[in-house]
Length: 183
Image (spheres, rainbow, N blue to C red):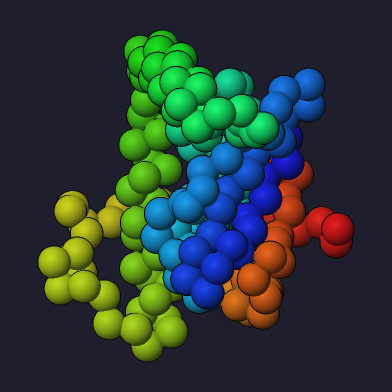
């Protein structure tokens, strides 16, 4: 599976998931734009670095997740109906994946570690986090602290590459690699 982070505007980006034999799936616009590290890139790094197979991108590789197959060349009303149908189908898949307790626990870990890593990276860059989200919901364990440090090191490596992209530029990863392909 290829995961593409594409800069689509001055303050917008998309995440495109390419699974062999399936239509490209996308989230466009994707949430949490940042000029150095967008939200979903943090998730990707957490899951790839920590080998989480049941997070956002591991689920996408297995046909789940919140990415919707792209539709083109049809009337707007038809596209809207198809997108609604695709969202319902994805929601059913997600509910099935969520019933798997180990997968659900890994997804929760991915969310927590992405949050903690994002805050730690921003602080390392001198950014002041939003006071409402400045404290972790519960204290970090020593294992979480070690994991966050690993992720933040990777974010430091990728941040200049993302920041250097012009609109239309992209980083392409072959899941679960952390080395962007040169395409």
